Length: 293
Image 1 (cartoon, rainbow, N blue to C red):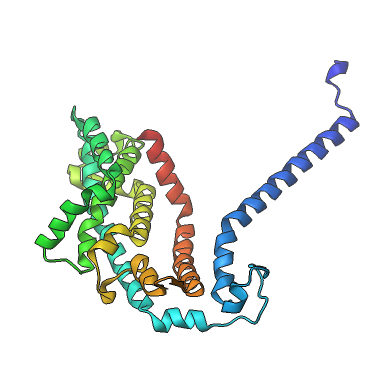
Image 2 (cartoon, one colour):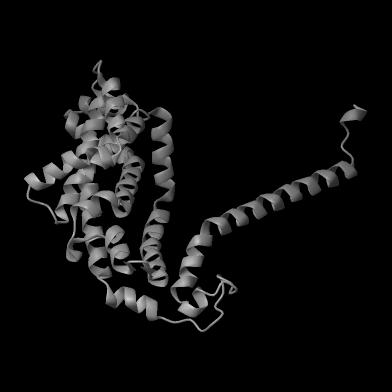
């Protein structure tokens, strides 16, 4: 029994270890946050730097060694079609998200719930489509765009992008549907709902975290995709941010770094705010879908 007695010295030693571990955890969290936010902070500071301040190697890149200026932000907002690019990116992203959900949800439900012997193989085949490099599909998709008469039109991206977003969204939703017991919708059908009615009224609300994950994934992918947007669209009025900003702010070997940084900040801030609003549901959608997929 004597060996089980905890002395006051042991309590103090344990308290010091606990305090040290907590401090170490907080320090690590702060350093990780600074490392993650470093590029964004650097871009925000660079936006307002003068050329002489930016290109002098001896200057500290995280401080203003000369008076800040708004000239480069004004160049982005008034000297380029940034507003047009942002609007094109927004409506293309919204349409792609709607198309992705409209196609991926019924496909995922069918593969996860209808108990067909080929469902597993079909799900894997759909996911493999997502792994095909875009460069291998470029020629066939360009023929499709030309056949539809959508060359040099932003609508071509609305047609092309779901070929990227739908496969992985189907795979994600299949995994998430497997976490929802079949008894729930079977009980709904016993109460008089059809299968479609049970899916819409009972299953879909429970799928909300997975749907949030699909929305975030599809929108961020369409907003950042570069190859198809560059290949299929030439007029400035039809471009999206991923191609419009660099093509107008990179002229030969001249890079307008401050204006490019301003574009990155203006795009990242609203996306980060929306993402953080749904962060918990987004993580739940990806983790639960991944575990059961």
